Image 1 (cartoon, rainbow, N blue to C red):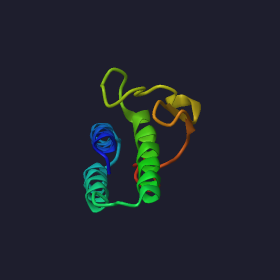
Image 2 (image 1 turned 90 degrees about the vertical axis):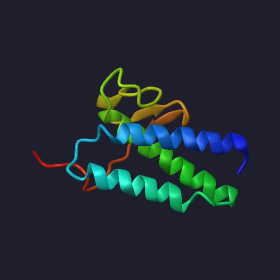
Image 3 (image 1 turned 180 degrees about the horizontal axis):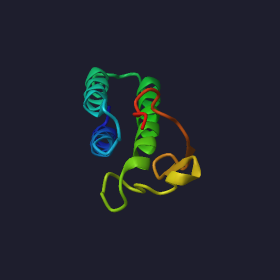
Amino acid sequence: MSAASTSGVLHLYRHILKAAKYFPSKKRSSIIREIKGEFHANKSLSDPERIAHCRVLAERGLSDLQAYVPAGAGAGAGAGAGAGAGGHTHPMLGGDISITLKGATTQG
């Protein structure tokens, strides 16, 4: 991986962790551990297609997590934008993404 893409992945990783801190779930700590574990497990990837696939998944996860970040909390560009629209526009993706974290939310 080039230095530019490494710094981009590190930037993405940091934003995901910041956004995950606001995720409303009893399982938040285990979700954060899982995020860290996934990035750690994939840090030595060298296949450009696999790297691109993992990056897209991470960007989608960030987009979904940003729906839970309070306005002005600073967990990435566009935090909170479009949260009620059913999708999320993320500057790194250039489009609407709508995914859910299955089984991670608490029932009231």
